Amino acid sequence: MRIGELAERAGVSVRSLRYYEEQGLLTSTRSTSGQRHYTDSEVERVTFIQRLYAAGLSSRTIGELLPCVDSPSEENSDAALERMGQERDRLTTHIAELVQTRDALDGLMTAARAHRDQLQAAASA
Image (tube, rainbow, N blue to C red; front, side):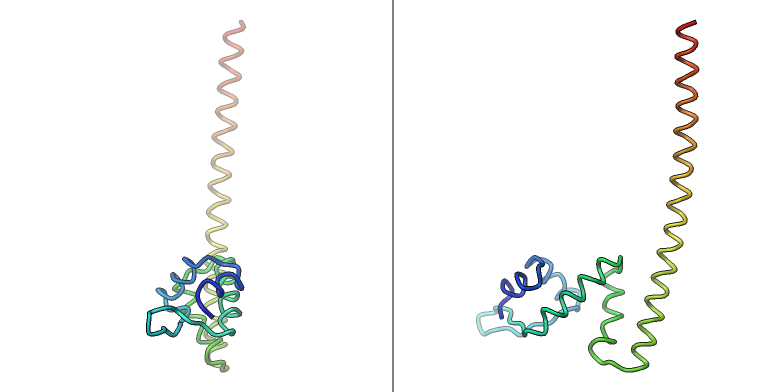
């Protein structure tokens, strides 16, 4: 199938598919006129790539996980699980940092409200 059909069947843009190829996540064969051609199995691969992106993984990390799909083995599965664990830890740290940032903002908002209330009280006195 050609790139437009793959995009339609997988529910992604043609631009995304080109990006996946640039990143080495997806491969195609080329016709003599240079058109990309894909197999039916690429629909499933693109759907899987989309799920990995939705989980917050970068294209580099996804590239590190694909050997588990392309060459299933215990070693590749262990490596993929280890890498996903690292990403989960990274996300957990980021979430904690975001919570701290939100809490600091809440403190600033409380101080700003108190200051505003003082100004209003002084103005009405």
